[in-house]
Image (cartoon, rainbow, N blue to C red; front, side, top):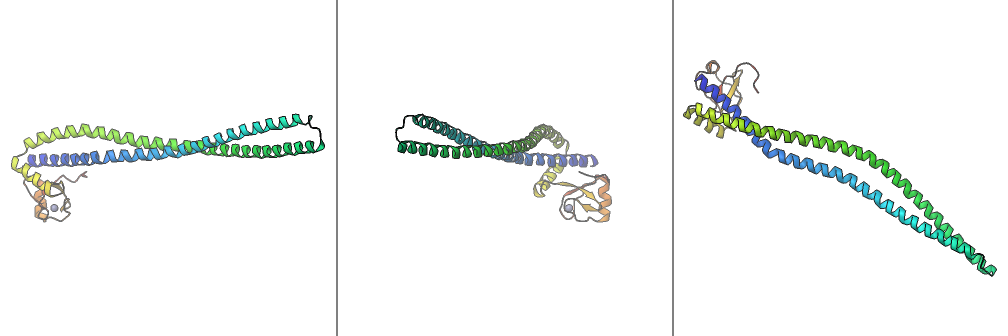
Length: 239
Ligand SMILES: [Zn+2]
């Protein structure tokens, strides 16, 4: 019986590990999807800032083109100064030039403002880019960790399935059946460790005499409360 109980205990641990892998297989793809989404949000953040800078650059170029055409107008108007005949014409031309010059200097002012704004945004952007790069690196690292774990899980799954197969052949069929039924009914745990006279499945105390018997691992003893098969793993810490 002792050997049978030990095999059963090993089977239980394998089943728990398989259960954990099943849960991870369900959870990991969702986690990766969430990380991908976070990564995209980060990328979008800088993308918007880049677009804003591009729009301002475009505005600046337009204003500069406009400014240089205004300056052409001034030159042409100044050229006409020698052709005017009357004082009235002269005054009219002067005020025309004055008006264009005023408009131009406003344009220059605006261009300077845009340039300053672009400078500020670029400074912010390079700071943000560094932050985003660091965040993305972290996210990528998390993703790699999960992917590695998934690969490990695949290997472990195969290994443990094989071991389970072997164990189920070594176990007496009625014991195996009992374990399987209990496992189904009791949240995946059919055989359970006992510590300090307490069943570790339902955490109810077991009678002292029973505890003595359990520690021998020599007979099939079941928890009076939850019905699980009791196993003594020794005093060392169990996982
Ligand atoms: Zn119990």
